[in-house]
Image (spheres, protein in one colour):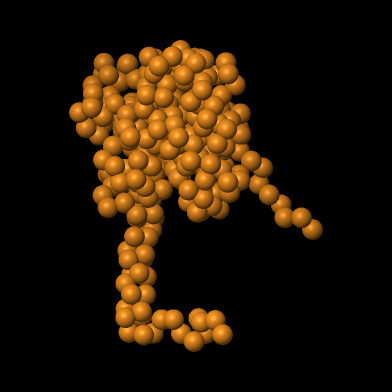
Length: 271
Ligand code: KIV
């Protein structure tokens, strides 16, 4: 008897998942390599986001600006190698969608060819033409507004966005513009819950919140934050495991065993 496999999640599946239609929220987790993708997929997430947060979580940088299309393609290929049921979305890194439609499509194609089913890019209505060009090239696009980490120098820090009524209205109009341009879903990062609720009610495609409260159509977290592998986490993160502590304990026990001559045992040796 064959093993029953969950059907693979597709862009059209996600596009219609508004909670106003009483769907369960969409679950999105980042992953950057094959073991992370296996864990995320076995945990039943709908989307694995290969985020440019890899710059910080994996490469130890203080921001995301050093990621390139080549870096992203390597991470996307590692994630998609496990053939997850989840939809794989690959981040377009900083500058990879600013230099004209041809450059944008070529860069997104590298991420799709590495195994992603869609790309994500940051910014509001200013990105309309890039999004329209990608959609016309059959590349599904997820938007990302609110706190956009690639704008770190303009924003002056990782801070909550859209706190005053004018900024909130601009955010709503940006979301409407992205949905009109063809985004199938939009990440809302670090915005007040009420603003995220207003954005969510204003657009026909799902919003995926991170630090945006419970009224979004879905939630996304960073793998290392959720599992307790990050040293410091923002207020909106709930840690569901303490893997760094467990790993340190395991390494130090092994070190003690080696130093005390308890490892390897005879059974752990070849004869
Ligand atoms: O790069 C990333 O991981 C992201 C999420 C935080 C949404 O963009």
